Each structure stands twice: as structure tokens, then as C-alpha cells.
Image (cartoon, rainbow, N blue to C red; front, top):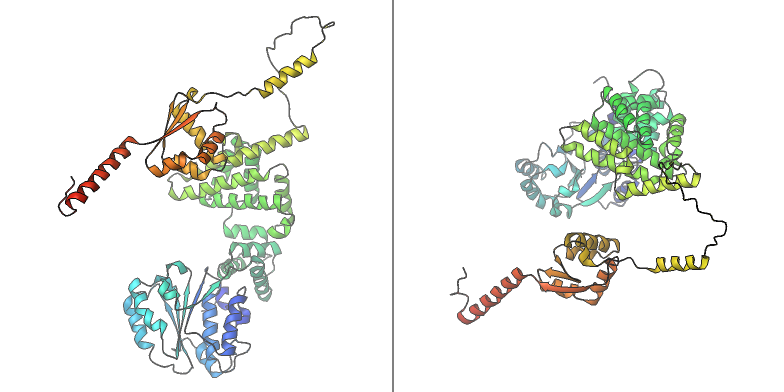
Length: 535
């Protein structure tokens, strides 16, 4: 093949080239140097984190005649033999396409044959979670007690699908996501070697797009390498990733933050005309609002985001007068929209609804939205940025002479005290049972009485004069509700009402069923279970 993809060309051949998995490398190297090798290993982690590469390096290292710091030397006869793709001492199996019990039976028969030119015969089973239940069962005994010359290395991205019987027979190594900074450093080295000019922000954008996977990041870097002959810029990477136009997206988010619903819909029309799907737009908006939240909350946000100077300054100006609560609520709205888009036939309607909802916190009664509105009002009051509307049709004050009138300040003060001390409470029978139930459950959640709130979900409430009656379905609930501690909690939850009495009783239906059960048990005791038939 004339051209080799970057992720294949720069696949590491030694443990030192394995990036971001030091905890795995250290253990494997120590096992090789101390000759304390296991017979079965399980490598698990997200795609593109180095599981297969580590398995190949490990298979070479345990067969190498002169390992260097635990890694294969690449020069001895064993290393040269294993570099040949036709070598049968290291066997790679794709469990996704060889997942049946017959393939595992064939493997179990062949594992008995010794290696041809190496010390160990290594089986690397990729995507092992794709094996069927019968195939796993066929592998169990061989995996537990393989021949001395055989070793198994299982690799998977979905370890939760592997039976516990397999997991218990393997030494498990969890591969971590690679930090974006380390991926960016690797891409920079590759571009330097390839003679490609680039901006640091562009390389960091590629690294972040990989989401912790080196293979994904290198695939994007491979595309960027051929995107143009000039210098690779941040905007070039955004075009490659299919992200929305930066200026249009900034204007869209600005309209949301300003609460301009009309302009929001116009921006959506502009974004749609660019050919972007609603799913991509939702992810772009979510990513941008997340970046705005970082700018708002973190002192070193410039280093965290690694954005171009112009873009970072634009973000900073957007969040100057926006509260954290508002940004958090917008994130929640679009996160919900992203989930809803998976199940709708009208994606644009879902996206537009989310955008309008995010731009109008005054119509959103979520707690975060209310906090954001309060925060905005506080800022306006603090800065004096508010106006008082002129009262129309005001009644002219009566022309009463006030020259000789001296107000009795003491009397006014006493009246205020009386007014403040007056308890404005109402009896419980002044509201319906459903309204009282709603207020009671809401206040129980507010004061943190979760257990009582949960119990009262299945309890019927009746209001009889000044008595609040609870109708329970079992006697255990009766004992709990009738306790002094519960009544104290109920008084606290109903503090806006006048004091009332509580009555607790068992449901008539449950009581009758209980009596039937007792009578049935008595009959069975007299006549015996074997001759009594209850209809």
C-alpha cells in the first residue's frame, strides 16, 4: 500500500512509546523482568487507548531473547520472527467475527501444540465480549489451566458483558483515557516530522476531538494533514470536524443569553441553511455553553480551553453579565434536547423549543432558572440598572391641611408590632383534601423528611372538620404515622395552617381482606391444609 494511516504508522513498538498507561506498563515490565508471568490477561478500556498495541508489545517482550527495560529489542531472532505477519506463535483473533462455540473448540484443540520459533504461544482475542455464552463456557477450562507454553490476552471495550467466571481467571488491567495535552504533544511531534505547519490551538482542538482516544485523534490529524498545503489553523480543524460556523454560533448563543427569542429563531434559520443537522447543532451549542461556564468559573480558563485569543475574548465578553446558574440551566435544557432528538420525527421543533426555553428563563419554573432570575434581579438592583414604571390614572390625594397634624408615632409603632405578631393562619378545612395533600408532600420534601414523604404517597388523606385523617393500607404505616416524631414533622410541614388533630386508621378493604385471611388460617388449622379449598 502506498500510504499508511498515521495511527498505523506510529503504532508504538515498545512500552516506552505507549502513552498515558504508565500504571499498566510498570506492572507488565516488572512481571517480565522478574519472570512472574500470568497465563491470562484482560485489557479493558475505551477504544484507541492502546489495548491491542500493549498486547502485541507484551507478546513480543515475553518471547524476546534480549529485552531492553522490559520492552522487545526488535533485533533478536524471536523479535524478527514475530514481526512477520505470517508467524503462528502470536495469533490475533477477532471475537466479533469468530464468536461461536466451534471457533473456540478449534482454538482449544490447537492450543495444545507448542510454539514453532518462540518460547510462548500467545493468543490475543480482541473484542472478547462479543463471544456467545456457549463460547465463553467452552473457553473456561482452557483459560484456567492452559498448557505451560500458552498465554491468553483478552481485549475489550465493554468489560461489563464478560461473565464473572472469565473475569476471575484473568489479571485485569484498565486502560485510561489519554489527556488531551499528551495527545496534542504526540500530534505536534508527528506534524513536525511530516513538515506540516500548524497553530497550537489547532492541534489542541484535534486532541480534544479525540476524547481521550489516540486512534480517533490521529485519524482526524490524518485528514487535517491533507486538508491544505498551508498552515493548519483552528478554523480549519472546525471545518474538518463539521462544527457550526463560529460567528453564527456565537451570535445564536448571545441571542439566547440576551433573551431575544425572535433573533434566536432567525439564527436557527441561518444555521440550518448551512446544512447542519439538529444533532450536530445541539452538540455544538452544548460544547460552547460548557466553555462559557469554564470561562465564568475558572481563573485559568484560558489554559484549560486553549482557544485562540480572539475567540477567548469573545467568550469572556459573553459571560460578563451572565450568572453561573443561567449557564447551568441552558446546559440542562440542551442536554435534555439532545436526548429527545433520538426519539423524535421533528428534530427542528425539538431544537427550536429548547432554544426558546433557554432564552426565556421568565417562563421556566425549574429551580435553576428561578435562581438565575433572582441573580439577574440582584445584579440590576446592585448596579441601579432598573426603571420604575409610571403609574397611570393615579388618584389625586385629597386636599387635607397637614400643618397642625402631628402623627402619633408611638401608636403607629404599636400597631405595626401587633400586625407583625399576628399569625395569619387558616384552618385545614378551608382547602380541599387534594390541595392539602399537595402542600403537605411539598413541605415534607422541603424540610428533608424523605421517608415520611415516600410513605404518604400511598396513604389516602381526608379532611373531617379540624381532623386530618390518614387511611393506610397496612398496620406498619399506622404505627409509624401515629408516632410522636411523625406528628411533630406533620406540624412542621403544616405550619401555615391552624393546629389540627390527626386520625390514623386501616383501609376498610385491607381490613376485610385481613379478616378473610385470619378466618382462612383458622379453618385450615381445624380441618387441615390438604382438604380446604378456598374459592
